Image: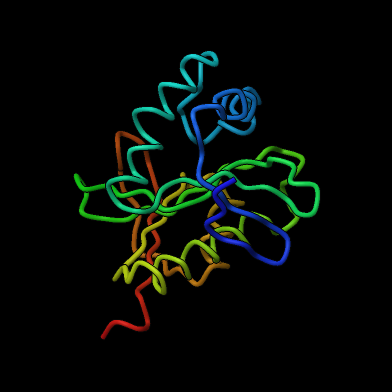
Length: 171
């Protein structure tokens, strides 16, 4: 297990191709993907997502979406991490957790740790986060992480509220 970040309650690690079933299971719940609009059809599709979208970020940018596990038993509860969006010239903070992990502060804990990692280890200047306007829980996580609301618009064909946070260590 290649652990990238450890918090009080969580471990965030890099995904591997063997994690396709975890990605598939996470996305089976319609409530989990209600605001993401990107269902995973089957385990093979999950493997394609890993091969084409998640794993290349590690090699290209030294960051990406990381698997999130709860200590001490290391139960997989979803993912969180930073995704380079060169077409938008930004680094996007994202997270997705299984429903039974909702409301426990895990998303905020993981997201905050990813922001710290991005600023302290990667020297990123700015991190952006987005959620659909009706996804109140996700918007709350962005605010709880210290991100500032900067506007609402259509992003990737969908309505989104955009937040950002600037690295306090970079003038």
